Amino acid sequence: MEKNLEAKKIRHLGRSSVLLSNGAVRLVVDPVGGMTPEFSIGRGSERLGAHWLPEFREETGAPYSEKTHGAFWKAKLLYNIAGDFLCSPNFGPDCVVDGVSHPAHGWTAEDEWTVEGLSVDEGRGSATARFSMKSPDASMPLRWDRNDQVFAGQSAYFSSVRISNSGNKPLSINVARHNTIGTPFLEAGCRISLSADRFIAAPAGTEFDATGRLVQGGEFSSLASAPLRSGGTADLSLVPGMIGSTDLITGAIPRKAGLGWSCVVNPKRGLAYLCFFPGAANLPEGEIALGFNDLWLQYGGRRFTPWAKTEGGEDRTYCLGTENAVGAFANGLEWSRANPVLLGNPTLVEIPAGGHRTLRYGVAIVELGADLVREGVAAVEAEEGAMILKGAKAFQRVSIGADFALARHLAGL
Image (cartoon, rainbow, N blue to C red; front, side, top):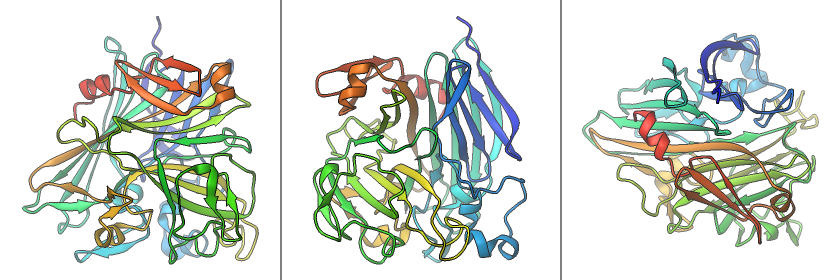
C-alpha cells in the first residue's frame, strides 16, 4: 500500500510552516507558537479542515509589534492563534510567578519553536517533525522537546512533548493542549461528549464575567444540565449557532480512567473530531496525565477587537475549544499555585529538579458508521493499536493507536 508520507517545510497563508501528511490527513504546524492552522481529512477530491483559523489571524508573516498591532489584537497570542497548540508553563492570562513574567498561555504558545528536523521513515510508516524551545528566563530553566507525527493508515496526528528542568529545584507548572475547532467542521447541531464526569463553570473575576450565560462557579454533573444565570439550565452537549455568549467550563476526568478524551461529532458530515491522551490509571512512570476537559464555548459575546471588527461591535468569532489540561480553569499559573486542587484533581504538574516529564497526545478525525452518528459517542477506549468508540449500543473499532505504543516507540522522547 502506498503510504504517501510527507514531512516538509512549506509556505502556508503567508507563513513559514511545516507540513506532515500521510495521504489521508494533513497537519500544518506554524513554529511561531506551535500553532496548527490546518488539520484536514481527504473526502474524495476535497479536503475538510477541522481546526479554527480565525478571520483576524495575521497572514503576512510580519512579526508582532505591540506598537503597530497592540491596539487591535491586544496580545501577541491573538495575532498568531489557530487550531491546537501547547500551553506551558502557564495556562491562562499573563501573570508573574516566582518573579518570572509569563505571557498568556505560556512561552510555548507565544515564542517561536526551533525546527530541529523533519523525516520520513517508509519502513516504519511515519512522518515526523521535531521541535524544541528553551525558557527565555533563566530563573525557570525549562526546555520543551516536541515530536509531532503521522502514521500510515491512521487519520490522526500524535504529539509527544518532553519537559525538562535543568535547575536544582522542582518546578510546578501548567500543561495544556488548546484544541480549537471552527468552520467548516463546526456548525450548529454538532454534539460534544467528554471523559469528565463532574463540571464547573468559570468563577467570577475572569474574562467571562461580561460574556457568559452560565452561573459563575456553578457545578453540575452532566453537560445536558448546566445552570444559567437567567435561571433554568442549558444543554452544552449540543452546539448552538451564534447565540451571543462566551463561556468556559472545566470537567474533572476520573482518576480511574486509563484514557482521557474529548469528542465533537458533526452528524451532517458523519465525522468525529477526537482528542485522546493517557489517563491517570496505569500511567507509565514519568508521563503526564491531563486531568481536565475544558470547553471554551465561543459563540459570540465579545464586543471588542479582535473578536469584533470595532470596539463595541458584534462578535463575529464562532469556534469551540475542546482543551485538555493540568490547570485551574484557564486562570493561569499564579491561580493554579494558589488552588492546587480542583474537583479533586491536581492543577499543577511537577517537573523534578534535573529531570523531565513527558506528555503523549493524539488528535483524530474519524468517519463514523450510521449507528454511531445516530447515537453519538458516549465512550472511547484504547485497545492494542486501536481505539474503540462506543454509543448507547453501537461501537466501532478504529485503526488509530490510542494505546500510544507506536507513538512511544517512534517518538524518541
